[in-house]
Structures are given as structure tokens and as C-alpha cells.
Length: 231
Image (cartoon, rainbow, N blue to C red):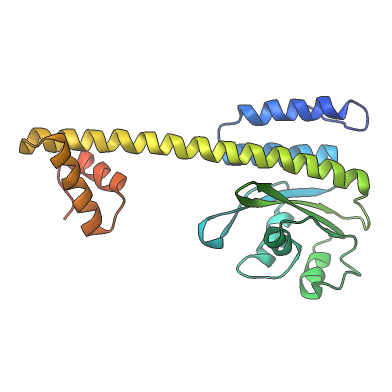
């Protein structure tokens, strides 16, 4: 990754370079890793990470710059209280200037302080459809994040939000195309083996999918692999 130095160069140009890099990434993990790497160079933070929301309210941690970040996230997962949970829920930026004095989440703050982290800045990754996750920035120094850091963090979070949303949409589209190909192949097997037309072959696959409570794609894949319909 290029060596970004926002203090020494044109911030707009640096973010443009980041946008180009994010556009060229192929997966969500690679995308958010580029974001956290950039954060370390652009902001006064010692660690950074991204937590993304999944179906059912679950969270995943696809990129961190230090194992400490994973520990901090784990403290707030599964219903735990802290700035990450609030940022995700309220779609708002949450700043903890000093974990040694912040009284909003005393249990969480005490554990984070033991990990050597004094300042925390959580910025939500949002789109028009909701919150995708949170960009977390951490420093071993108290009062590490000033107004300029907040401004840069918000721009970075916006780039990350667009990149993650785009990458997820592309992956879903690719999965949909792949599923259609598998179903088409499975239909061809049924049509040849049982002398069925296309509509009837698809109906057979759909019925097996419903009866076995499995995705149509998975039923098609098993038929292709085994040349037999699931029991």
C-alpha cells in the first residue's frame, strides 16, 4: 500500500488514491484491511479495526491491525455494552477521550485500559439502507483524537462504507449468477435422464428444495456431484 501522509501532502489526492485502491480490491476482507492500514498512517492511532454486521444482528471482525482490537471487539459482542454497540445502534460517532476517566461503560473501560488503550474513536459505516459496521480507532495516549482526526475518520468511514457495500453487492451478484448456472446444469441432468421439459425439471428441484429445507442451489450442487437427487 502507498505511504500516505496527510500532514505532508494533499489530503484530497491521498483519499482519491485510497478510493482507487478500494475499487480494485476483490473481497470484503481485502477492502477493510486497506481501510485500517490507511487509518494507521492518516490518524494519530496505534491500532485500528473494522467490525461488520451480519444477518441476525451478529458481528464479524474481518480486519484488525493488532490482536488487541479483536479483544476490545469481543468485549462488546453478544450484547455487551460499549462504544461499538452504541455507534452501531445509534449510527453515531462515539469518542472516548480517556478510558481511565470515562464513566459511561465502566466495566468495558476498565478492561480496555488494562489492554493499554486510553483513547477510542468508533465511527459507523453507514449507507442509505442501514449500518454496515463500525470503524474503530485506538490509541495508547489519552485525548489522542482531535477535531482534525474526527474529520479524517468520517471521510475514511464514508469511503469504507461505499467500498464495503459495493463489494458485498458484487459478491451477491456473483453468487446469484453461480446459483443460476448450477440450477441450469441440474435441470439439464433431470431433463436428459427423465425426459422432462424445463418447467418440470425446475419444479422437481424446487420440490426437493422445499421438502429437505435446503437452498435450491445446494440441491442442484448435490445432484451435479452425485447424479442423484437428495433423499
